[in-house]
Amino acid sequence: MKENKIISVKNLVKNYGDFQAVKGISFDVFEGEIFGLLGPNGAGKTTTLEIIETLRDKTSGEIMVDGFDVDKYPSAIKQRIGVQLQAAGYYPNLNLTELIELFCGLYGIDVKPMEMLDKVSLRDKARAKYKELSGGQKQRFSIATTLINNPRIVFLDEPTTGLDPQARRNLWDLITTIRNNGTTVVITTHYMDEAEVLCDRVALVDNGKVVVIDTPNNMIDELVNSGFERKKEVKKATLEDVFIQLTGKAWRE
Ligand code: ATP
Image: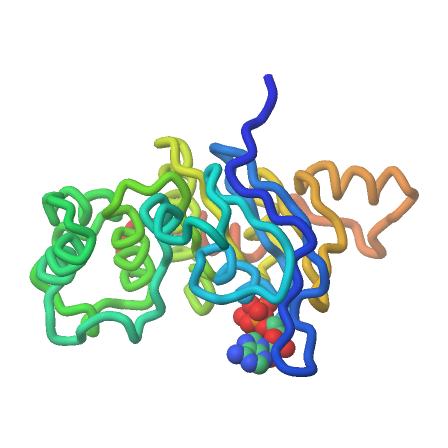
């Protein structure tokens, strides 16, 4: 079966004054996958994402999102995507129900706030204010807001940075569920383990360039086949696995 390209990025360049943050990046995202942009701070992940989201101008290159050219049809693209807002975007004194109603008003869409909160296991926080949520709950809430317009693609920019292991794994489950329900997910992260577990395919980005694009498995297999060996024997579990095994990962952060 031929995979359907839902995003295509060709030779993307972004200059900030004299500084070239993105140096000719190309990649495709297939419909129904979790695609990761993986790289260190300053690699150009956020810049690339914001250009695809039509929130930032590019210097040059061609980008198509769900069949629409970013240069010609930015509003059609905006209707089809969900973008995770940074925390500053939320009114601190509204509760979660009121915030979702506000977004519905902005989109001109009628959804039941409780249904959205159920998707991210926050029903019991319906009357809480955004500022009263924990880090993991805030991330889950912001993911709920990306789903309000029933998007074809959601973009998550480092959604698990700063979270504890339980909250991170809860978010991985949530993101997988969103994908399994038919939404394509594009995520940035600098956590290698996260990309390995969560992403169907990954583009490794460094210094404004794509170094390699493949499935995590293929990348690792290729390295091993090339004769690479780790210095120390790898254990079958990590300390994080021990912690999760002993404490569980209930929604309690
Ligand atoms: P992080 O993981 O830290 O978010 P990133 O991979 O998302 O990193 P970007 O935020 O895209 O990286 O930044 C890429 C480079 O562009 C960095 O060197 C950054 O300092 C620079 N940059 C980003 N935004 C601007 C801007 N508005 N003006 C000038 N330089 C910028």
